[in-house]
Image (cartoon, rainbow, N blue to C red; front, side, top):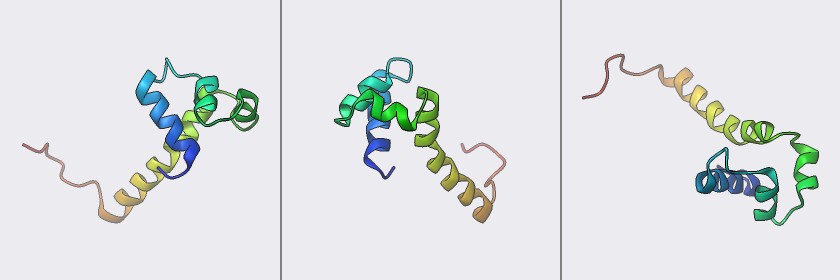
Length: 75
């Protein structure tokens, strides 16, 4: 993914699921306070969006360059 906080968010969500993860747990995993994280990300959804947005940007760039690919399902 790239940055340390993005990696920690993804790892924490993988361990606990999105519902089971909290901003406090993610902050603790990065050695930060919850206040430090919520200063930049008001909600867990804002944090999730910041984590996945780069991946979707890369995916959109791929499709713009190469097209949607085969229209039939792979067998």
